[in-house]
Amino acid sequence: VYLLNQNYSHGHQVAKYAKEGLAKKRPDVQIVGEDLHPLAQVRDFAPYIAKIKASGADTVITGNWGSDLSLLVKAANEAGYEGKFFTYYAGVTGTPSALGQGAAGRVYQVSYLHSNMGGQMQQWMNEFKAKHNDDFYTGSIPRIYAMLGAAMAQAKSTDPLKVAAALEGLKVNTYNGEIEMRRLDHQLQQPLYVSVWQKTDAKHTYSPENTGMTFVPQAEYPNYVSSTPTSCQMKRPGK
Image 1: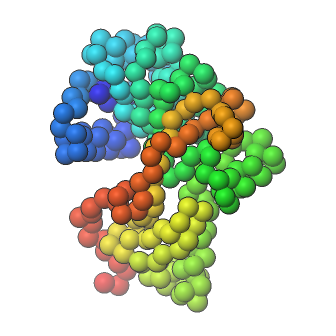
Image 2: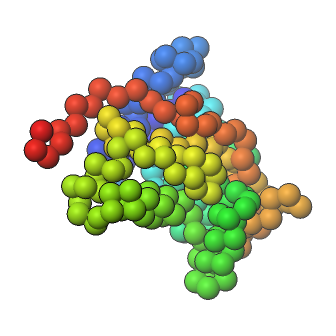
């Protein structure tokens, strides 16, 4: 595995927890290289791909987004690198077009949704695309309003402190089941999905940016699996 991330807080966190998670869950997996690069400044990732190929890595873990992800995969395709990429933001506007067919079966996305959720989310995605000619890839938006609305109703108020208190331990049903605002640190406990970039088919028809490709789910991790421990000692106003 090679860790390639942007040189700011998020990139540092991705690298840190990738190393910790692999050491704990998969000690047989070897990390053969690691790089941090300037945020949104690299225009040619060929030198990084050359280092990845030279390391012998068959998998890259990256928290890159935007041009830093699309240009990274573009450079990998051009250099003939056939390893896999595990990402968080491959569905963000602009990236699906950059992935193209050359990334089929090689780019994975870890996220709280994928392109073929079905049900209410699929309806929203289709309606959004028809109206805006863009993809509704941010699945947190419906959850934000569901949680906020439920907390306001429970608090019978829009006062921020009362709403914040009502959020603690609050559970609501959203497009893929029940989610919970963890009382300890106000972190949302929600399912996660691993999906892979491949051609659309009869079962998986939604195509980001009309590429003829899509993200197909490979694994689902319910709340109790995706939840991680916390040592947060959150301070509350007035306490």
